[in-house]
Length: 269
Image (cartoon, rainbow, N blue to C red; front, top):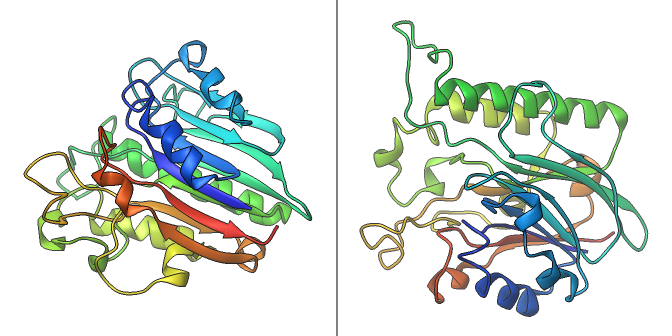
């Protein structure tokens, strides 16, 4: 089973590029972020005619996540548990049934968190974007704990807006005070991983120079000034079935690209 994650940065802007990549890469499941579309306006026919089942959790102009699957999608849920007042469309779950086993897909678009607003004691200012990011990560941690307790095979994938280690940035020093790389942000990432989850890409590839995002500004792509912020985290059962994990870097150099590129795993399911 090939499962991909791709922050497309707007379905309207990527209406040609996304289907072209799907036709080439042929993932069984594609987890999309930043569709920037309400559910009713998502061009589902484009994907249904390619054999994909389509489930969306959209929002006008911002955020939005979606699942495209050539396999049946069961028990679809929308929204990250833990805050009934959270109106941002950033999370979708569904179970995908493979040839031999099923896996719970948790597709996410984790908040960016900038600007970082702190109190005098260093804690995030209540109501600020950084406080929202940190609270969202706490809720994601709780969801992972619940799935582990249920012994549900699962993976969490998407744009985490977290640079896990200095080697995951071409210029780590320039990110030190950014919400994506602050010590507290990375601490919550480590706490999540330390539940027993596997960073699929790092399980297969070590060393610097591997990125999934390049800003549109200042020639970042041409200078390979990138960061790795799109990730697959696998529970122990799913990690045991990991065959491969790669980043489709070349997609960034094509016409009208997203500032992110796809990352994918192959699972023996």
